[in-house]
Length: 388
Figure 1 (cartoon, rainbow, N blue to C red):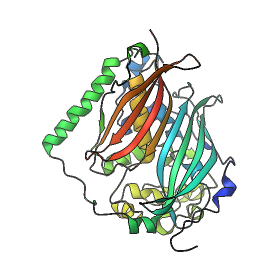
Figure 2: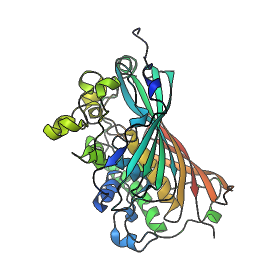
Figure 3: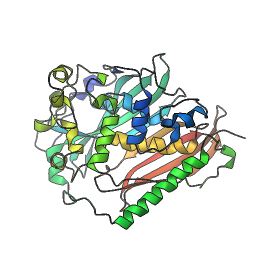
Figure 4: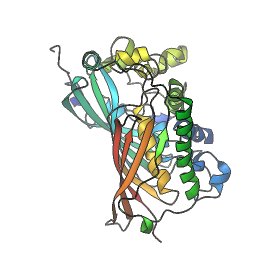
């Protein structure tokens, strides 16, 4: 292999071959659901206030749609990271979700059936030759009901090329004044009030027009503390939180040196679990430690792609309300949330129709950006709303 190439020859033998499933060790608990809503900065009382939830459609706490990914053992990225690419690292590149109706409640035992889908190699400004790999996740409950399908995209690249080609100048967090922080809290509360205003009510398809804008959602400023809170809400990050895979080998995937580690190793977890905890050792620690972020081509600590996807799903399903249904969302990630930055989500209705199944559908597009206007992600989604 020449110095500037990316060897993806090992990937072919994994495409279309089912891999080990992800399996929770214990049923979902209400505290798991509450922890997730809090970690994803999603103040929808339906997911943490049991008194409020008891008066609504579900008569009890229900997990956000985004919670499905919390029941996986790797952010939904596992089937999009099969096969070895020497000297590589990985970032999340996007998610496409389909939701089928069943919801997750306390007492459910979720498993995820996974199949690698495809890959392609493109030249990028970030790291030269880059592999965009996709894999499918099928989340099911203990009754075998299909809850959701997630098609994840990972970006696999050579960390040495990313360090060589990327600018690491923006290594310092932006500074926010007290006045600016107070203004941010006011803006965040405006979004919260939009959730309160809908409450248990119905958002009717009849009342929606093309061009309507959704409330603005603001998150942040992000910090190592907020990213850590997110990390611990994923159940697989807890010691023995899931039944571990036996086919996960970071070195075999091509991760090198200090980024390989033994994250999630099922044998070592029982002997010395701190060595298997991705918050501290292994490829995931680039999120929480600036030194390791720079090692893989990032200027400073950065957030999780799966969390960005969850923010979008929560944003859309919160607008749809209890009686609406997010059917499909296709998100493309362009850049992560960095410490010190804020995330701003805006959306508008771009289409309205009744589909061939008689469902009343609105289509929306979403834009996620930081305080500088830099686009972090875009998405299009279809939402079913009730008719009068």
